[in-house]
Image (tube, rainbow, N blue to C red):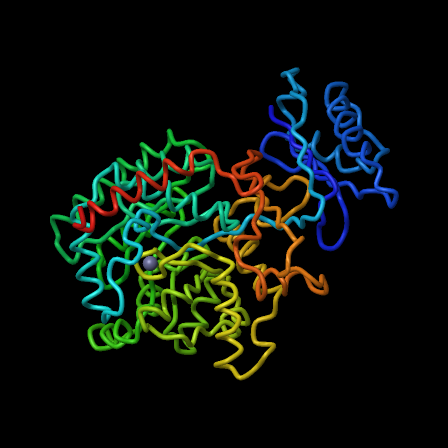
Length: 468
Ligand SMILES: [Zn+2]
């Protein structure tokens, strides 16, 4: 079992040592005023020794340890497995935050970064579908590796994905060390034969996903209510309920989509999904930009998670009036996403946080429209809640998904407000070290294998886009 000790790092303004064992945080200890460098290691070693003897420790601020024994987190140690010497990371000058959670993206699309700029939505979409005809498994693998690399470098440890060839994407995620949710995507365009085939395929992919690494999880996507027949939507509703799976969908992204739904069904897309019995707290709804008051009430009543993809919405000119305050007030869970690189061009959640806040403040004409603490929650704990994982927070017992931010630079000087510096002043180059599931994925901004990922992804992207 791997052990990590992060020494002398700043958590919410206080100096602490953080102990990680296996994939979980097992201790957070205040660093004494005199900054005794040996306390953390002594505490870690005594904690480990106590697991062996089944005793709890009352000193060294290790009062959290009995909880761990209770919840069975240190199984390996109690079973007598060899505990390695801990890896020690010097957190001096760094702050720790939970790993960010990107709640809506299409990771394989990273190969389309910059492929079609300044075009109307329909022309852009036609080009997406044309390019996607040429995708193969190798492209999905390396495109997803590139996406994971970019997310690690910008502080994201978990993402909710919707794309093709999910076995390849899951392989890429397993290799990258990050955490991801992959959707089998329903998109039948009303073709009954295809719809039937998709139901069979979804079951096959679900079975196969049982063998995935636990950092990969399977979900089902209804691409959008206008691309999937009602028979399949009902099937997804029942299958996901039976198997307790999440549903990932695009809802009310454009004004056009809402108008067409009103014309065809006499209902908004959200009212339609509600009437079909699909909405629940297992549903993650990307965009949800064009909402009336009834839509908001329905999303709140059913506890749906919405994902604000501000950069994609702005760039595709889909709109910008995301009704954040009304949604949270109604009880919906609100999170952030980047969308795919074909539309948003990057997977940088810090940038998404900044744009979201600036835009809310501007169109509401209210500087308090989206405060910093709520932005942080949208990018961390709210995502974890939607995905039903014990992440998005730094506390004993949580998954060890965390990010160290380098603060010895202009963006963080003076240190009057860490979160303001992080979101409004810095950019992702401040992300120094990333740990996911108890493994160090990046240290001092170095990700092993980075050069190969960049070169393979670039070659395949040129081929995919007909430039080679
Ligand atoms: Zn999308």
